[in-house]
Every structure is written in structure tokens, then in C-alpha cells.
Image (cartoon, rainbow, N blue to C red; front, side, top):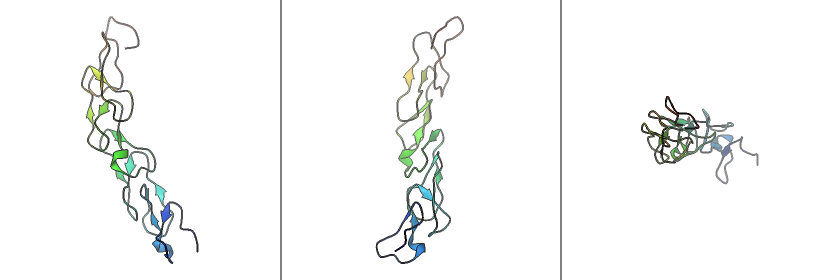
Length: 128
């Protein structure tokens, strides 16, 4: 028995190289060849031949992601992972990638829609 190429698998009893198919999170143009991990910002949830799909707008994923739920909202955007991300409202922010909710800016700080940080307006100083 010979091992399947990288990031592929086959059913028990397989006897041909073309029975080796890409694992989810990996892509190739044909069966029986080594598969490459999906790039960051993409995912592939099915085994076999095929390309990786882009995460929805304003979200990203790690290399080798194998499901839509791996696409997490960018900083400044929020929603449960796997759906459409919406921008944080003006006066709120989200500084991390993921499902966290937008937070209200501290007193005497402001932000525009889709902000990852708050800033101090004219006449104020500090971390925001």
C-alpha cells in the first residue's frame, strides 16, 4: 500500500491514486494529487476536487479553513460567525477579529462607522 499525497485521503480498500481526494479545507484541480490548504480568507467544506470559496465581505479565516463558520468578522464589524458582517455603528468599536459585540466608546471619545478603535476629538487627549 502507498500513502495518498499530502492533505488527501481515500476509503479503505482503495487501490488507485485517483481515489485519494482532498480533505475539507484543501483544494486541487484533480484527484490523486497533493492538495493545497485554502488561503486565509477562504474555506472549503467538502472533500474532493474544487476550489476554496471566499469568506463573506468584511470577514476572514485562517489558512486551511473547512467551513463557513471559520470566517470571522474583521475588527470594526460584528455578527455571529458564518453570516454577513455589519459595521459597528458610529460611537462604537470592535478591536478584535471574531464574534465579539461592538462596544461603546469611552466618555469624550468618538468613532466612525466600522471602527476598530475610538479616538479623542479636538480638544481632548488620551488613549480614546
